[in-house]
Length: 125
Image (cartoon, one colour):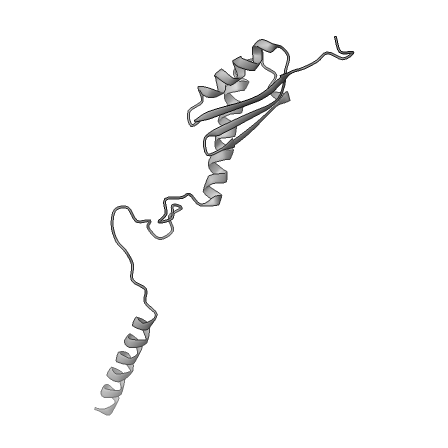
């Protein structure tokens, strides 16, 4: 009889101790679930943001690679949250606007900053 009473008392004490360390949890459709990459503030985790930026850069390079008249080896693409910055050189002035137009058509691109320049021939001519 004393064993059963002491077991009940010990279980009650453990329940009280466990409840002291408990934190209230908000529930609702707009709240992030445990293990999700979106925090309650609506921001994306840094790892997920890097992956999304890397994926967008790959999409931009793939779109440029479909146009054989553009040498994508001399281009640099930086993507951050849908904003794409283009750098590097192209062979002709007409390609500066062409590259920007191609990049604007890539799904996920929200804006394009074009810092492309025309490649000068050796000897300055």
